[in-house]
Image (cartoon, rainbow, N blue to C red; front, side):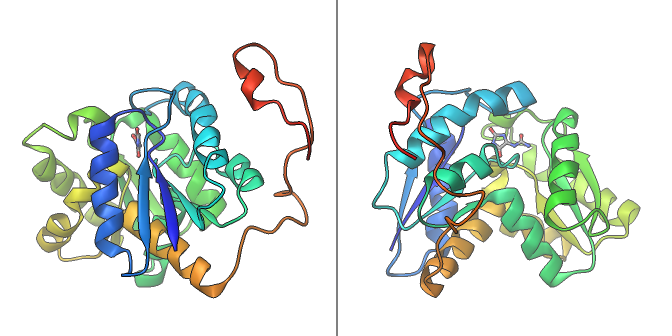
Length: 243
Ligand code: 2AL
């Protein structure tokens, strides 16, 4: 099967990191195609960034009709519902996958994310996906997304924030709140002694499982293809001639 893993930001080095995490868990018959959108923000750290990442994400979905499924590899799961309207196969966001996985291996989890300003979005998503009770807290390590790559203190900082979160929240599991933290997962888990969930890997195996089960995105109701419509200005290319 072919899984397209979309890094919703336009930083190629982060796409490479995401690809490595997805390929590490993909089965032998699975081809992981990691892509960077043709347009969008260099990193996603605000609601503005999320909104402007969505057109590039939708292009990356629409241009891959042969993909069996898709992973949205940004922790805000930007454009997830719109992506499902376009895609035939399953589309899974990394926050969605990580939070669901966390509830299967513990009673409560804490999220460790990048900047404080992204905490609200993570809380909103937890309310949607798993109910507010399962997510015991969202904590920022105050490292910008693109600094995760080259700041040598990142692992120590994430472990420090996670350790405090486990105590303060009385949680059992840590969810990493950014795709750019994927490479920290195993080392953080070894240091903390609790399950640490990287959403990129979790979403990849989840999409792989859904494709193996033979289930696709339901086209009966809200995830039916969007109706025919004219789009103008820079969005002309998104015009739909049929629903
Ligand atoms: C993210 C992420 O996963 N990718 C990105 O650009 N920003 N998430 C975050 N909380 O900062």
